[in-house]
Length: 391
Image (cartoon, rainbow, N blue to C red):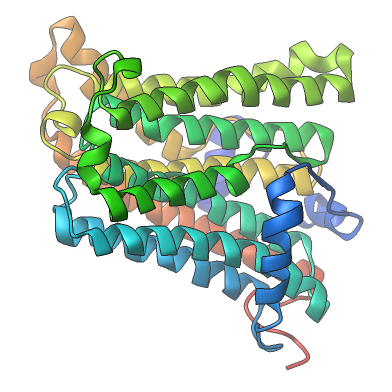
């Protein structure tokens, strides 16, 4: 895996020494910094999280708590496969939406308990931050699929518009953290208020039925309410989150803002590729009902992108831009998104097979890359990733 990673970095002109010892030296001096302005977090949720943290056994490693949290989201995604056959459109028993709501609040709770457990057991480390954000990257798409399912959007353009904004928001947060050295959580942010809103949406399905989101309202101009919520998400990200991240980076160093803005292009390219591929004439992603499958492949690509940004931040290395999973996305976009538009659709064969290969390769690469990074960091810092050393 080491040689594959180095080959990737060399071919794509990225930092070949990212996980070498000389790059890891910054980890020993690294100190976590964050600013959380959320009133909901401060006055309501944080006391609840602190209370829940008291029940965590002292032998349970913080990273294991993070894994337990994300397992609930994976289980809920499995329910989409079982009860909706992955179409994210068929109405389900209301109890399933209740499970979705519980899994989201459970994930959020465990995601905040892990840091408290680390401080309580004296096992705080840069690896914990990297691991936490890596899991958050996966949930960025997996958790959103629960919302698409609740809205009954299925494999549609509105569903794509629901999935992409959280990706843009998280990428911009990682980009902002890289340059400011501080994680900013505003008065309304995705990990706190965003997840609570998603829970409320699921509970509406429980009490009013999933058909509630399919109703057109006078103020939605005839569009289903769920689709209107997706548009609202896009507007919130575009007009509030993105400018907020840019302003924070500008405050850090106004003279370098223009240069740093160039590193936003990867998420712009990824977003454009997603829309170009999914809306292509003849693509089976939407017409064949395979958006769920495509989104899972996309989740590992996005996870690889954001974790490398955080790793570069922790190691004080240059900003990363490209990787192999992203190139798989771009290649698929070219073959199945571009060629059919220029009259060469006859060359775009085997799309479903390619999506499956894309999922398998992206997932394997993500897990092997994660293992490589975890092994290097634990060996360098002399720590354990999934157990408390004193125990």
